[in-house]
Structure formats: C-alpha cells, structure tokens
Image (cartoon, rainbow, N blue to C red):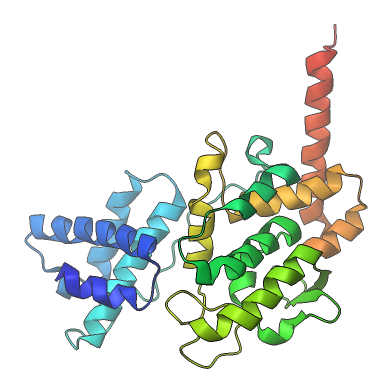
Length: 291
C-alpha cells in the first residue's frame, strides 16, 4: 500500500515532502488500526477527532496543516484508484492562531540572506531557477504563493522588472530586479524551463517533476539551508520580515516600504517600524541603563 501511495505522491510532490507525508500517513493508519477502524472508510468526524488528538503532540500549526494535507492527498489517491468517491477532509481548514509578532532575534541581515544563494545544487538543471527563486525571497521579500503564481507575462527583461498581482492581503506592485537576478532569469528561461516543461502552461516556474511549481519546492529550497543558521528560524516568512525590516532600518520612508512590500494598510508596515524602535530602545538601555 505505501509503495502505491508513494508512486502517487511522486507525481504531485517533491521528494522531501513525500517522505514527511508518508511518515504522517503511517501514524494515521496505525492510529485507526489500534481503534479497529479502516482508514479507507474514515468519516469526517473520525478524522476531526484524530486531528484533535494530534494537537496535544504538535504545538505549531505548520505541523498540523502538514498532517491534514497528507491525509487529503491520501483520499485523493483513493478516489483516483476508485476505492472511494469522496474526500471527507477536502473542506477542512485549520484556523490555529499564529503569532503576528515580529521576532527580531529570528531576522537576518542582507549579507546573511545572500548566503542562501550559495547553496549546492543537487540537480544542475535547476540551478538558475532556484537561484532566481531565492533571490526573489531575499531581495524583493516575495511570499511563497506570490512566487508560485507568477506568470511568464509578469517579467519584463527589457526593463528588468517583475510584477506581482494583487491578492486579498496585498496590493499589486512592480519591482526592479538586480543585475544578477536578470542573469539568473535569462538563463532559466533560455536553458532550463523548456527542458523541464512537460505540459504547456503560462506559469513562470516549473518543478523538477515537469509540472507547475505549487510551493512545496520553494519551501524545500529554504529547508535545505537551515544548517546555516542553527539559532534562528529560517523560513519564507522570516526572510520576508527581514527584507522589510532592513529597508526601514536603512532609513527608507515608511510609505515607500509599504508600496515595496505590497501592504494594503500602513499599519502593517508600521509594525516593523515599532519593532525597530523597540530594538533601538533596548540597545540604549543595554549600554546606557537608566539609573
């Protein structure tokens, strides 16, 4: 059974994600077997109960969402195999509260972020693609979803710009690319993309498997560099926060940074300004404590 599921997942996910999902699914199967239940016929309520049990073991929402996603893929697999006609967890969305506080200790300098561009590539055909993706994270502060949703028409090589469409939380914006980013992009478009492409699409980024990049591959790029920062939380969110924070710390106007980040409301950008002011205050108290 696991081998069949693994083959199914290989068509949709990156290798590291598959390994994680299979681990979670094995726990899922074992839990149901201990209760003399068949996971293939699991009901909506039974799965909700299982997720509830996992909450006592996993305190962060990322792990819980990953568990839920693995189960969703399992039922999609059963539907494809015609062993089930519905996915009982398709509509389930976890709304575990995530902290919106910006943790300064987890932020990175521009020099630290640029170290991510030096990662060793296992597949040379992905080198320019991966470097361009990483550069969009560390220079423009893109979100994972924004990168995955980029279209070929969103890049303008002549002007050296890239456009991000608006979303519920962010405004559209057109940002200037650095010289090395244009180099990565041109090589990717001219040398790599057509080789990787297995199905026609207007999406900019193609995964190693030949389909459009959904986001898992982007997270994997960052996961593979976590060893560089043992004491910090390296992920696309802290990278974006670092980019915005560093712009304000360098003295850029709040409004300019707001447009750069795509924040719909200035209060979203002001959170970073307050974080910077608090850091300055702490530094003053550290070296010049009040008597």
